[in-house]
Length: 355
Ligand code: IPM
Ligand code: MG
Image 1 (cartoon, rainbow, N blue to C red):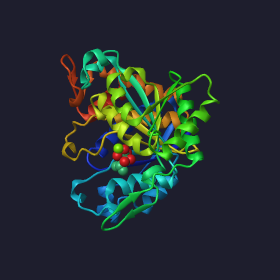
Image 2: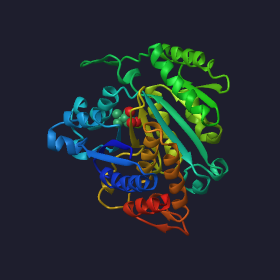
Image 3: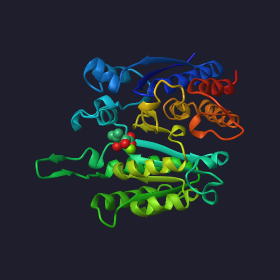
């Protein structure tokens, strides 16, 4: 039987609960498809500060290095809100892992199943048929990792892109589009920024190798309005690290619940880290009310992108949809449905994977 080693990093807040639910579903996949998942847990975030004095301990990085993929829960703990910027939980843990493993391609799907359109904050006429956007965000360059200066009276972050960095993210976007609606929108600020001029130019060049994929362009400010006005018209959107950060939060909110959306951060070897779009939601922690679907769908992305297990990934995705026709967590509850907790949602989805 084929065995996959998964580094499980539950993290803070609701992280551990939604992670358990995802493991319940993975166990069902393992039984049905005769594969083995070998989990090794490691600390990250506030729990890691408590035990090891840092949000990303060396032991955790080692465990990740010795695994085939990282399944990540959420980090963030209000007890450590006052730490100085260089010690803050989210940047230390997330940027640390992204850089260490060169996870340059961040896939952030934002979708709305038509039958869930009432959960969207947008009006019915815009979202009644649902939407399905994939934001492909560059994740290891730009202002995040450029040269930083902070003095008493000035601060600056260098917004630098090198051509190969744009080439690889563009390639990821076009390859993804080929498996979808074959439509890429390049989002940048090339009317003002040099790094964006390079980004757009390079995306345009890479596009020549994908004549079957249509390419469009939007400036970031315009893009933020267009995804509200006509979310259904978009397929893949490729963008820089900084703009992708903002655009993906906006896109995620259009679906109504952050608890539904997974994400993947992948390197050139296909190694990846898979995590829900939402945060640690400390106020919800331990209450068995959080929606585990984002974590469960993140596990599906792990199967698809790192383990090349397409039919198993689809089995999870279908089981999620099937379950939602009857059961809902609090955040997406509607009349006529049965409300269930985090754990129960995991169990129902696992049942729907079948035997
Ligand atoms: C995200 C987060 C991170 C980012 C922060 C927490 C460092 O907002 O994953 O989008 O800016 O990338
Ligand atoms: Mg963000």
